[in-house]
Structures are given as C-alpha cells and as structure tokens.
Image (tube, rainbow, N blue to C red):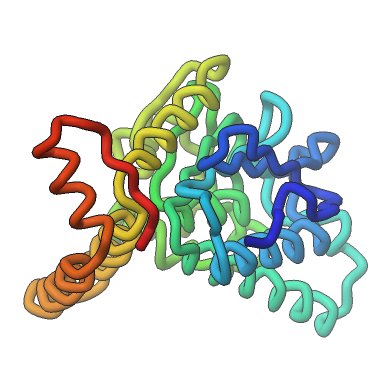
Length: 268
C-alpha cells in the first residue's frame, strides 16, 4: 500500500501508530483548520490513495487540530481575491475531495472537536458517522455569503436529519450545538472533549476486529439503503452477501467460532 504516513502533507497530520486505524488531523489550527486549496488537494490525494489501496488499514478517523474547531469551513481570506474562474477551479478540487471521501472503501469516522462549519460540516457529513465533543457547534451558513453548500451538504444533511430540518438549517444558516445535533441524528454520540479521540479510536478498533470484506460490503449496502427503494436495496444487499460466501474470511470466521478462538481475517 502507499505509505500515507510518509507522504509529505502540508495541512494534514497522519498518525498510523495504531496499525489498522489511521488518524487524519486537519492541521491549520491558526485559522481554525479552515479549508484552503492545499488542504482540499491533500484530502483528495489522501482518500484517492486509500481508494486504490488501503492496505492493512481497517478504519480512518478524521479530526481537527486543537480544541476549538474541527474545521471552520472554506478559507475566506484566501478566497477574497479570487476571480470567478479561480473560485470554480478551487471548488473543483473540493468536489474531487468530497467524492473521494464518500468513495473510501473502509469506514471513515469524524471526531468533531469544536466548531464544524460550512465545508467542515460537509466533510464530516461525508464520513460514515460522527462523534462530537460536548463543545461542538455546527452550521451550514453559506447562504449568508450569497452562495450555498457545494460539498454535498444539501444531500448529506437531508439524509441525516430529514428534508424539513435540513431546509430550516440551510435556509437560516443557523448555528446549533452538539445536543441538538444528537437529537436530530446528525451525530451518533456526544463525548467530553478530553476523551473524544480515545472514544472514536476505540470504535474504529472495534470495527477493525470484523472481517474487512464484510465491513466493506456492509458500508456499501447501508449507503445504498439511504438512496433507493426497499426492493432495489435488498437486491444490492443479497449481491453483497453472496460476494462474501466464497471468501477465505467467511471460512475463517465460522471456523474460529466453532473453535472458540479469535478469527484471523486477511481480507481475502
């Protein structure tokens, strides 16, 4: 696999000290981890690498540097002097990054450690699920800037909280806290800030104990369930299920159960 920890990223920190879990930290704390062109490019490149070959990794955790912000959204200081063409070219990079995160073959979990605004919330929404610190705040305020969400925000927020709530939040640009986000099923759990990353890594490690082929097919099937009718979704589920039957991991999992031992999955 490509050694993502050895890649010289400027705006991301990559920690693979847990052999099967990568911690990706958005690392521009001086500007609340705002997305500039470099960060958009590096997120795209990182997740495209993982799409090609995730190697032994079984899960990715995405968080922000510091204790104030996951990501404040797009870097408006950088964008302030852009021409229309430059803005659109930069946004094309973000579009590629968003698509790469959505397509990641292994689970991606957001650990939201503070403010999560605009494009930052869109990045979090591209993850499979979200844990939030108790100080987390959320918003999609693009309408206040004369634009709108363009990182799949109107799509993913609607799937998370429902059409009416999504319209309310995006049309007002309203700020809401972690408690509301949990009530509206945007985030799975609220954790004290000091223990957030440990809690999310523990979940990632729990996932890593399952068969990686199983997890990949579960991820795809659940995603399809949110986007199609029951009959079509079930047909996809059955196709995914049948892909697992001839695998070595299926044989290993059943053998380990009967032999009362921990399975040694290989992803084959």
